[in-house]
Image (tube, rainbow, N blue to C red; front, side, top):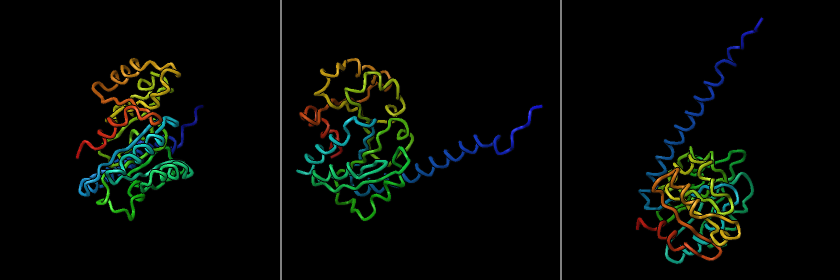
Length: 227
């Protein structure tokens, strides 16, 4: 005789879905408020998402160093643990704060809001949000940014956009990093660009190298194009 499942077990999946919907709704409302704050303050906010090791921090350090010559730039950096990235980025001379997410694989609007406490947004021209290294979870969480960039390195394989289409569909710009390693890694750049276009036709694609500076000017123009 089959023993019926307890009522709790029968409704658990529905409860999980409802909780997730509530969390996302609350995040979206807070992200909307953040976007209004950013707009009112006149600060351009760009978030960076990628898998671990794609070169977000290296590229961000170079951009902050260059931008500080003419603009007030800052960064909020997300990681599960340690302040290693914030310490590295502080070498640029820009204001940097670390957000430790604990066991969460993404930043949330609430974390960004808390991380901004005490900062004068009106004194900033550009604010970068460096998300936790992950190409899945961050796609569902709006942070109030003006633009989201998805970074992928030439060492990750040309099929990365096909494997993680959601993050590309929620981003505005695809940044191919570590361009100086393309030949050594055997990366077929034309195929990589084609795969990005298959997932997101017409998406802006910028190829850069933090080491050599290739493509950096175009990327900085992308940051400052609202000016």
